[in-house]
Structures are given as structure tokens and as C-alpha cells.
Length: 153
Image (tube, rainbow, N blue to C red; front, side, top):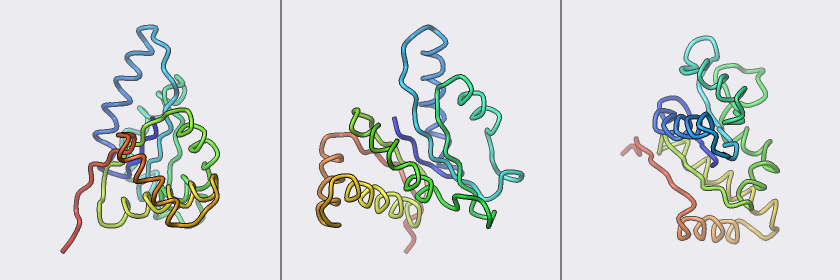
């Protein structure tokens, strides 16, 4: 799984990860999930940090965490982390991973979709239209899922 959700968007994704952790604890073979998570600052609003760190040390997730209020951090937003990890992300997609996006529908979700389109173009060649076609195919195959809110006016 590829899980993408900043801030409060993490809540539903947490359920997926918790289930995977329980399966792994019961002895099931579970593929590592890529988690792209963002918040403003690691010291103020990185909720569930200890849980994420525990899941990472257990091999349940590989976290890529972005901090929008830390100007010198390597990733400001989840889409920045996705772009930097595009080789891993693409390998997971090619391996059959499903993508789950949860959170802000006004800014984050469109930026995530654009990052996925750019990654598809980078990996497959083509142009924005062909990348958009790829994402549409992922949606039609039931491999891209989003639960977003706050579309604005």
C-alpha cells in the first residue's frame, strides 16, 4: 500500500497500518507500506509519532514525513517527499500497490494527483495527458482511492 495523508488525514490510514501491524504480529507475511505523511512541525503537531516510529522499526511502514513549517527540512509537503521517493513509489505501484489518499481536498489532494502524474511521466515517458490517462486507469482498476474533504467554495 501507498498511504498519503497529512494531519487529520492520517486517521483513516492509521486503521490500515494497525491492521497490517496486527497481521504481521500474528505471523502473516505483509509487504511494507509506504507512508507519506505531513504536518506543520515535528515538535508541535506530529500526532501518533511514537506509533509511526514503532511501526517503522517493526517493518510495517516506511515513513516519509514532511514538515510545512520547517523551512530547512528536506520536504515541505507530501508531494515533495513523493517526488524524492519516486523510484520506491513507482516500484510499489508496478508491484501492484494500491494508493490511498486522505485529507485536504482543496490543496493536498490535487497536488498529490499532480505528483503521481509527473512520476508516471518520469517513469514511462510521455506528457501530462499520458500521465493523466495512467492515473485514470489506476482509478478504473480500483487501485487509486481517495477520501478528501474541504473543497472550498
